[in-house]
Length: 462
Image (tube, rainbow, N blue to C red; front, side, top):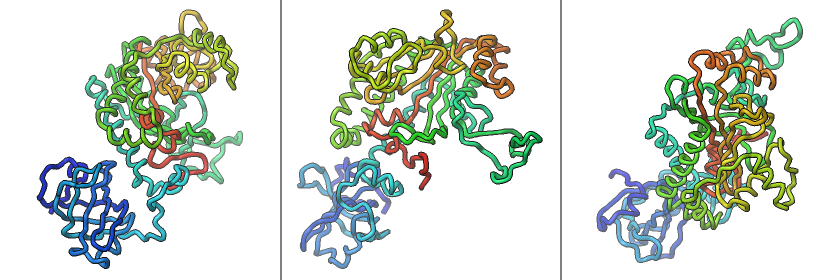
């Protein structure tokens, strides 16, 4: 008999008909007359109850049906007399596909801390929490591609291995085939990268933005969605060494078009989660964050506040709030400042614009005041910055001046500069950290709990 997914069976009304389900045992309980087995196959957070009568199955038959075991069950679908479950399956045949020793299986029926579950990331997808998170992650990834596809954007695959540092930050993972203990040297003692695989120094990408801009200058509107890497030694609840980024780049968009797109995009994603992940969101709302669903609905229904960096600094300075980090014009805002603006002052998502040039990346469009650039950061409750973007500088001379000011070698990004010589155009873009989005949508408190296998300092297991 062909297998039926549990999510479909729970919504079925075909009572009296036989079905086959396969999945992993969550719990088994009962008495000498009957056993009740809670079975889950990952298609939904909800289990289906298997009823195994003692007249059909002896204790010996069921001894290997333990928590964690994988079984195949054929049975008759009936209405369930138990509260909270619409149907159950009266077992006719049970086959154990894979046993799980109760003495060593680490996910028994008890509470487990999120810290412990990170240590067994190969098993944690079987828990309710991580099943919910990973299903939501799937829906969000699909929604990202659907949003841009429906708007006519082109999905551009930018390189993972690159010779440029998009942000000029320097915290990159090196890619090399040279002998690390004894690399070839130049006469001055420096490493001779001409003998390396690519003939130059290369790294894992920190962003696909610069290559994305090249695509936008030919295709109009593109987006990237792929893994990025930062070699920052940051062991915090907000940092990963490997994470996923969504980066649209659009020709002929100014900063206002950019803000409009970012707001529309975020509202679309949150609404998609509300429409398609209701069971999982209700579980996370109950178990981790009692305000999660209300907060998601609020973002969808509330226009984002748009305010300049200068005005935001004035608000923070006059707030009377005691911050750990002092607020002065020209300094980068910290998470505590961003969250004050969102959660206490405006009580809604905020888009900050026109940041000081000195604290922003070299590629951002310079304003006429000579001090600020057309940057934009979208700030969310509970998260702080969730999107960073800008109108890009399309003027060759201005861009070249900034490249020199921040110490980037022209020869490293000659191709990027050259697009400003041949048919330059106003254009904009932004980056959304996918795991930051996942933190907001799931209400989880640690970024390591919204990616299947987190990569952090001193941790690359699984």
